[in-house]
Image (cartoon, rainbow, N blue to C red; front, top):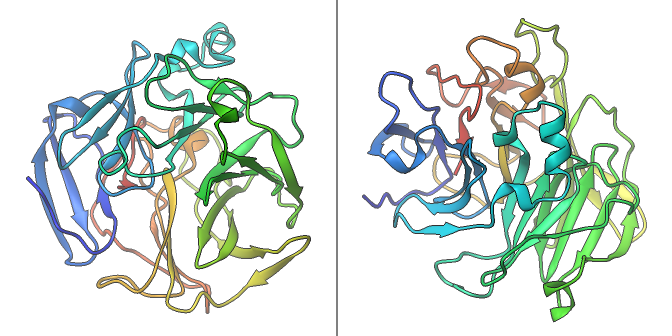
Length: 323
């Protein structure tokens, strides 16, 4: 079933009683679509920045790219080929969530052999890259400065990564150099230093590189759900400086447990708004019902927050996310 949408869909969490049925809430129309996806049962899912595409992983460490509307499946190298994965297992950590973020440089449906998949891997939160036809991932040297990355975006042949401390590393993919060796740092910038307890996002929009700081993700004690967004701050990164952005105009940002998106005016969403989903995995993995609490629409002009989806949808593995 193909669904024509004007804004990202909110993929709701898997339901225990009927895991094959997935619901998708359409922000632009205020309606919920129901589809059957046995391919997603028990899978860890992350949005990758293009409509309908998901990165998925299972408990055996198999990873794929899956397109919801065409059901296209692209097999990736297994998770045990990622740098640091063996150490993750030694720590007794959950292997299925080893990949923290995933981003495509272009849509595989329109560029079947000319795209790059970037991953932020859980330990030591460095980059790994993959191209079609390659049998393994290429990892960025973990000794580069500011390597504990929080988010990644793509623009004009470059991946831009931002660390939890707000530092930026730019990786150049404009040549074939990166098909066989680790990507190199060509520039680093230092936007505002932010507390390690915050989430940091990055996105390229209308000729501007934006870094977004999310405050309030980690204000919780184990077993409670007191965490929640208090404030977002947006910064525009210039060649050698930064400035706070207090007015996004008609643009809206979509962020959370998926690739960060910036959209121009679309039916159903308002400018100067940040549409966010729960992204405090440190909290919802400790809670019986899982993640899905911290969602809403933040007004950048006055700091108010209102809900977008008003139902309840919780999960420890894959809470609601934008696709």
